[in-house]
Image 1: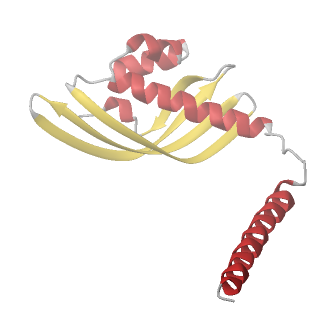
Image 2: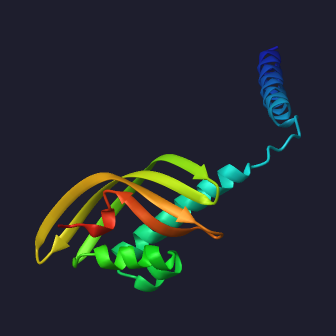
Length: 154
C-alpha cells in the first residue's frame, strides 16, 4: 500500500508536465499563427540608412579616417567636414537621433550629440544639436546645420 501514494504523486507530476507543455505550445502557436509579415516602408529604410551613415561618419571622425569621411559625403559635405575639423589626440562622440524628415531626395537627421576630446593632456567636453543633411542614393552627407559636432573642440 505504501507504493500507491508514490504512483499518484508521479501521475500528478506527469499530468503537470503535460499541462505546462500544452500551455506553452498553445501560446506559441497563437502568437505565431498569423503568418503575416509586415513590409518595411521606404521611409523606414531611408531612416535606417541615415542612422547608419551618421554612425559611419562619427566613427570615421573619431578614428581620423578621412577616406571614409570622403566616401560618405558629397564633395560639398566633405569640404565642410575637412574645413571644420580641429586637431585632437582622441575623441569620443555619441549621437542620439531625435528627429528625421524626408523631403524629396534629402534626409534631415536631427541628432543630439555629446563629445569628449583630448588635446595635449587636456580634456574638453561639449554637447549640442545638429541636423545632418543627407542626399543621393546611397545617402551621403551634404551639409551640417546648427552645431557641428565635427568642429569641436573650440
